Length: 299
Image 1 (tube, rainbow, N blue to C red):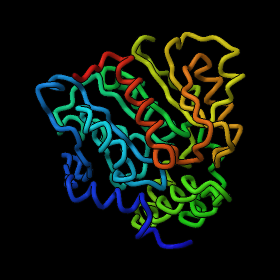
Image 2: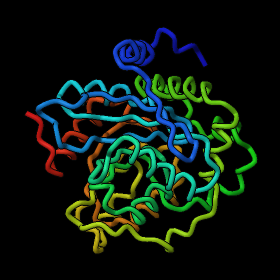
Image 3: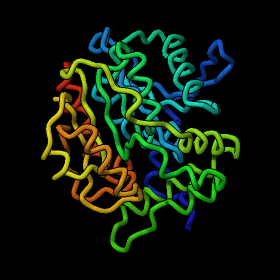
């Protein structure tokens, strides 16, 4: 795959890094969390909880640089977070909570996650006061489909990467960029992420306990007909949908649609696995709509 050094995404990342410093917080459990903070506290957003962005298995915090730049320029405070090496869901959940404590982020956060699976949703079930709404891209809640691939580590991730598609330059650039990001992760970081990804977790053993009016989900890959054809107690979910095929198995798309069947859906005609890069303007627009729907208005 060709170098990304001269790609528009790489150039925009470099411009972002020249203006926004990478920061670190070590929690009292000894784990170090890295983050970028855009749209710092101002008179316009004082007292408004930030949008917290969490990458997936192959991503790093700076893969959200376009959302941080665009939303930050509009006055929204946005944090992009890179989580530490941990080996169990419980360790991730409790360390994430300690990170939020260290950042003085008490409650009512807005979270955007990419392929972060069930352990963020488990976090929400344990700490419902922390999360006001959740935006999901390529989300799912059952890891059992991945268990057989657990020993493959980096090879498994690379083989599951979407392949470049002719006449889809934006998607191809996003794939190349994310492959480059994967190369910056250590073997231990990748092993930790795949371990979390492949640990068995029964999605029926937990439930998100939040008032319906505070729950918003955005997802890529939910089966629209199935999602809209059922009803449940979850009344205000919001799903980001791509019409085209992605690397997320259809069974998991159907599963997340069944679990949150009345989710709202923001439709993107093309976007691939990484629409926050390939179609960042649309994703940023939907994130802003999502924040406003949850009471965040920046003058």
